[in-house]
Length: 520
DNA sequence: GCCGTTTTCGGCCCGACTGTTTTCAGTCG
Image (cartoon, rainbow, N blue to C red; front, top):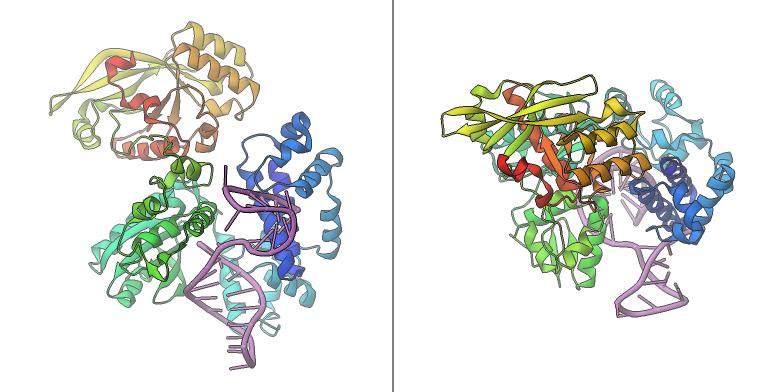
């Protein structure tokens, strides 16, 4: 997929325009940024779109008009984009990496290049070490110090971190803040709340009468590596897991609006604000305003959505992928709830004593690994039911699972297996290829025809929500498995549920809601 | 450069924070 390559070029073009430009050209830069984001979230291969439908097809993609369609065509036809090459001659700068340093944007990057020749991360590092930045116009001693900090954070962080790791820490921090007794309310926001598979940072909101004490508690938590900013309304800390965490103090009246705003996504919020304007109102993190008056004061998020003529949109759907249109028409998918599963579809430990856990999760049964069947990645899982309140019953009900990764180069055999051998579940679908590829479609077709469900591995979060999002219109069924290796890991199921929610998969297609009898 | 059930021109989300200013530019979310 060249989508990403082109998106990267568009981002760079945008940075170069922003660095050099005046107010007017910043809109042009925004257009390139929007097109880049659109390409990044596009499921289809842009080259295929262009080759089969020409520029007209490209212009159907949101954010892509005539000019940018020309540029995409130029890239596919010739391998380069002249506008990009020309800009690069003037700005031979690694914007992509440098913009990732907190506190550095296009303008300051250009300033650093023009004045002291900083082109990339290495140059920046040297400039900081030699204290060459503090005397530059628009910079000072403090800026140099902050850049030094940001650089360290960038180098020590692993970029985006996996959701399970970040989620666990977010919950820990939330519970810690609650336990201080200082807060009236604490909520996790941001991409953690949207259950995005990877997190750039962690966002927490709190209502408190004692902001200073709260900030003290926050910045002195045991897992804080360093304090990046500390104020009365917002503080930022670097965590042990290679990411940063923001805590914002919110007023009670604004909490709903703030939670909506800080949950994002950015694209979703931009659309929300436009919808508010269409209703003669103004939406921001402080409230929903009609003639200066916050009509959403003291209300929760769902009030804001309803006031704007929308059904409530679950956080996992807030990516501007059609959820606002669906909410306007009352056609949002009925996604599965976190506490509604009747089963975990595959675990890998002895569940015969797991009655407490089964009760805790509300399961009527669990399917547990029951041994490998052959060398072709086929294995069996057995049903264990909750027998009254006190024991777990091993049953004679078993199901066959097949591991798609054993058939990477032999999709036809896999299809044959699914059709002929009464395979009930398929794992590792994403090992075969990407959505839209013919071999993947073939397998999906076979699964749909043979009542074989796609199994989600909640622990490794695969297939991804983006992968499954592209299958949302198929009839294929989904089974969510924690693949827990011990009772503690049963909680991973949450991430599998999150994947189906983000993928718009409706609850009636989730096997976990069925009774074991219906499963057979 | 994109976009349009008030459109083919004239808009483009918007407010906080921060450091470096002497009234604001740049960055962020």
